[in-house]
Length: 595
Image (cartoon, rainbow, N blue to C red):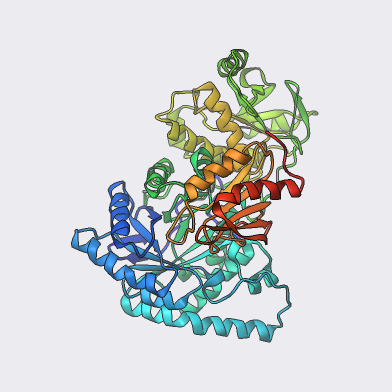
């Protein structure tokens, strides 16, 4: 199976066009940017105001949660007030658990998003074996629940998103396919087949996860499966890393997952999910789109094809197995920690800051790029690669710098160049990744540096490539060092601090997510290697937390349920007490240390 024509050059995946009101997705259209309201759907004035604010900063589709039939019915009033003010942005109803709410919403909006894991199924974390007869009976039950929405959507000319989430797969899917990218894909395909049986094709897919590696693998597998099913399965794809969190970490995690797929030509609409006011998501999303060459182009780049086998498995993560090599007192390759390299001047500046009393915490300087025992090669120079492969000892290797004109001529981005290097280089040689193939220059902005470095380095790390990273896009010493470490953490390559999975707020949220996330971080940010999920409601509850160690989930207004893994262990805790009770729970399980 293949998820893109070539791993070594970018070509945007051709899809059919799906019309969502006045906005086209896929086909010849540019990649669309969307977001979601955070206010109560019954508060018509707030929904109208937030929608207008989002449109003002460039949002092209606006999603609104519809948890009940009553909420769904109020979409009529929201839409009417927006249209009366001249706002034609397409509205998308977000549906979980209640098909009746979807049927009501489909009367008033341009698109409905359903989650196959909970549209017709209840998640109980049951373990049971299904016979083929039982499994097929479940599929028939789903068909009966889903087909009315398909028929109404077709009759009304509205679109649909079949949006699978990693953490909310049904028990039926979990028991057949496991908690896996394959399960995510098959869950969506079940619903797509029902739609196609009724000759309804106005839908897009999504495969969201909070772990970028899982998210990337699921989308790649989806696209590969669609290609296998035939040319008329060319449906557009919506990209997003769900529960990415806030601040720099949320932006890095989103850039890794979304940027990696856009770099392979996958993706027709995106949302950056941040635990912040929705308007802050749009500049990040638009910047990502602008920084990926094919995101707003229909022109296809020339394909660079090589005869070597893939340097990595696109559908399952495995780190490239390099031989250990000692460099500047650090071990590189194999199972050794991935290290961060800086240019000498930045490295020295960081050391001076430490001597002056600046607290660096876990962000400690490691490698100096200029004095590393490093071979820099053009990955298309087969003779140079062959010479390194003849060496008796492992060598540290990187891609040689080039001028911008050369990039335009051969069409290779840093991602594609390092993939080609990994393909042709003997696996025993460790690789130093660079976020740019040009010398250090001042970035256009801090966001520019963060996104560019995260897309390049994070994508390659999630491919299993790389044993150290060299930051060149960020010219501020402390910021460059912090960015390097945070990319490694977000890509799951090196855990050095607490990891947070925090959902973006929406109308279902039962507490103030931004304030609560801040309080939880203030209490727990020193817990190295602990993963904490902060979820506003049960929709983003135990399932969505995926592999978190502990969960803080809204169970009722101003009441919190606490989880260990996916199991609820404490219920209906008053919100004022919940952060302290979370600290006690972490201590009970032996993972608390004092700051």
